[in-house]
Image (cartoon, rainbow, N blue to C red; front, top):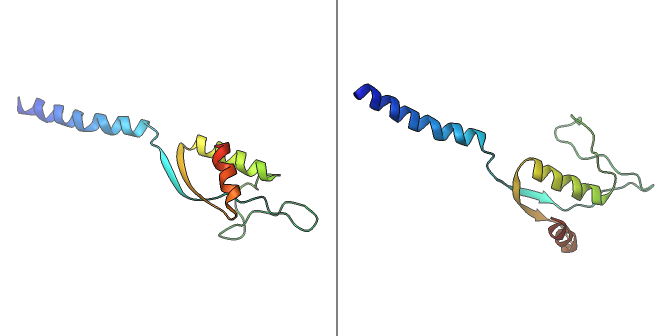
Length: 101
């Protein structure tokens, strides 16, 4: 009888862990910026800033400021980010992003 009790307790402990491993928990991103796309004097988008340098990974896909917003929202959806702490000055960029989201 005691052996079955131990097995039952073990199953009760394992089952919630298995369920949590499958569930995508929501994420709150605490560092986001509503930055416009930076351009050089000729109007060509500047490369993204990279740390560490040199840049690793794929180059930025954004060609316009609206692309930055769209791609950020797509990444938030893809990664289950449900809330972000967003900053930028002037605040009209933040309000624009909030309205779009």
